[in-house]
Image (cartoon, rainbow over all chains, first blue to last red; front, side, top):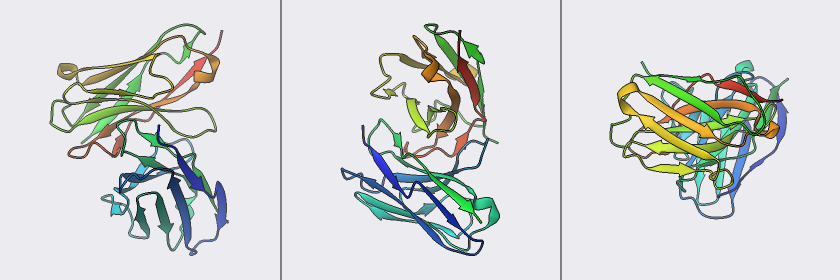
Length: 107
Length: 121
């Protein structure tokens, strides 16, 4: 299976800050990489698909970039509701996999 | 309006077989490119992809769990069923079903609320 490595595992930032989360793979997955936000006790919600496409209804302060083996999720102008765990997910292989998650705390 | 809902037992004993049903509405699994997957999350841990069934009855399984998993669909009932054999306490998790829309069969745009399954004697 294709392993995804997210960094950092956790981070803390203030309202209004910008943060970047990274997702890396050992093999190329083209642009078949998605990002999700999961708030405590809730199901994940899709933010970004195929590396850089913003899901309908998601605020434009979320953006994704990257290709091949290195991908980033950037959240600008952080809001209190962004306190959550963020996951990347690859769909290059029919056997999908998720990263281990990045927990974002809003101070 | 797209909705998915997981159902099944909240508690199973070790070695038993778990059967979960995902009942959905607002889309058809006979639509070309449509898929439904199962994902689980042990308490306090990361998401783990389990299995996917495609509109054409294609099936894909997690490599580490494929010997224990079976996924099937009943298009007329709008249901997808996942069975997992030989349950272990380490299988305690919230189990989610999620939709993958066409055309790329890549991302999960709608999720169920999840069902917590505890494995304990």
